[in-house]
Length: 249
Picture 1: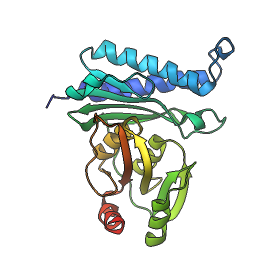
Picture 2: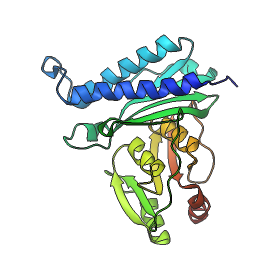
Picture 3: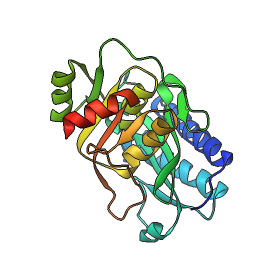
Picture 4: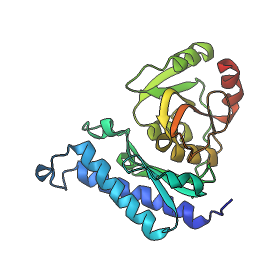
């Protein structure tokens, strides 16, 4: 397996933060969209993608990049080091004035393992990363389960009933995952499918922070796979992992 270094972790945090700053500028109207046929979300996606690709290519010219906004190179599956990025996670929320639940994801998959990652939450001026991962905060009295803002997630409702937990909705997989990392939520559960760029960086940060992350059946999450579809996801406090997985089995 290829080695990762402190530079990888520091770079992921830097790149996600810089892309977040650019997206804030675009959202504030610093860029002239009137000359473009693109809407705010599409324009932000492309500009953030272009910046991240340039930063990664300049710093790590031998690494491959998998981006939601880029064309896929099937040669990536033969490479150990692949940067997996979501230039704008939560495009719908980004386009709604006042919403803060959108993010930038930058991760490095090393032989399929999400070793390096950063999730920027630009509206909060925060970047969570494996460079200096946060400590898991103390548990709350009531279990808080966070899930998709725009779709029904029956497994979340099931866990809420079984664990007597409170349900909360939020956009952006990155924002929901970091809510568990920073203690605003205890469980983030998703079913119905995502893609690798939706969860690679959040999973890397969660694992580095002492948070449990897996498939709903408890199997580890692996990235840079031939099939980019990730069917389901569980991110939760470690002490809740066994009770949750037992219920889901």
